Length: 481
Image 1 (cartoon, rainbow, N blue to C red):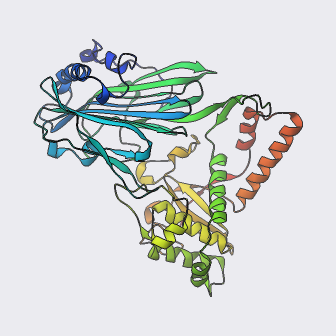
Image 2 (image 1 turned 30 degrees about the vertical axis):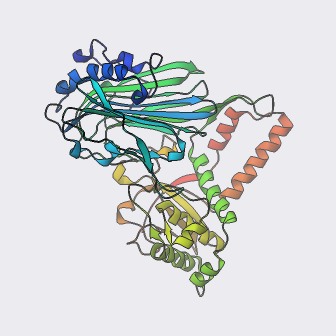
Image 3 (image 1 turned 60 degrees about the vertical axis):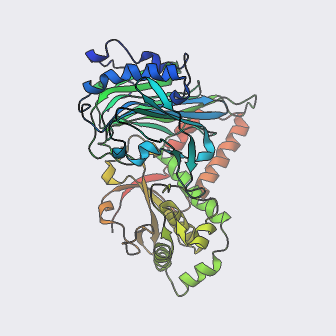
């Protein structure tokens, strides 16, 4: 896969550039569904002639006319707009994610709107409410009252979601259950956030990739689009997507730090990548959660009483979390989320996949078991690129205990795994690991850097990046049973 490619798609059916005005936000609202009836009608009229020109478009239960994700930094918030327009022949054939799209956290939704277009007229602008998943770990979704949708109607919706932290990755499908006329994804880093384009399951010559507004050789605005995409028979319901599934992503690689008159930190680029960085964050997360979690003493004592070795304690804790904490899963559960209070997991006897891992890790830490987290990519999703040191690739974790002269891996989230074993599909996988005690080592490193900076008068971010990369905090290890 190459990067930073500017390629112009040469498809004669698009030669007139009929979609150009729809891309420009200067003339109309960011959210398509909030535009005037005339603007929406104009866009629908430009798109519909291409339905039968898209491979498989004739006779398909639906055709995705417009799938667009736009992201920008509007200080102090990062905003993402998703637009969808779908020509419907059989409304009942649409999966729920098309008619009740997930929005993550409904509290972050600034606007959500929808419309139904029929024969040149907007016949309704349905109300949009929200169906909320469990607090902190739920995936909320928009509940749209579509009413009666007739054959040939175009339904559409737009959402604008904002958050204070930058989006680490902006992802769009390059193929879906139905043929797609036009898909687009873009990010505006506002001279501060540097994103790089990545694509999988699709060739570069099938995309148009444009990068603008370079700062220090880093593009601040990145746009990708693809046109006339065929249907994909069995697309994944949600991320993470397999490598062979057609999708594109704009991934945050660096952010520009420009302190206000502090003089202590020199302006420059802060690297968001690096295996050492990621390992230190993993170690610090366990240590931080362990410090803030109380109320487990009685439970922990009952589990580990009579267990003499670290591995015996680890096995007992793993078995308890595996059997006594119900795994929360489903379309409205964020499997990677962790509540602020792990005691809620124990009290409710329910937890997400990551909550079960973190709970077992914290309990092991409190039982003086030298536990760390081994992070890896599920092999079913495609191989990990070890040379691209970005944690966005990582999808799964197990606990690693190095004690009594033996390394064992524990998977409390796996219902069918005996303590000290992992799923057979994960054996032989390369996992990012670190040694017990890294959290304290990284903290000492940070204090050393601060001390040196105090003496020198400033922290040089470029030099700091090189020093962190040069540490021996992280390495890859083969998972084994």
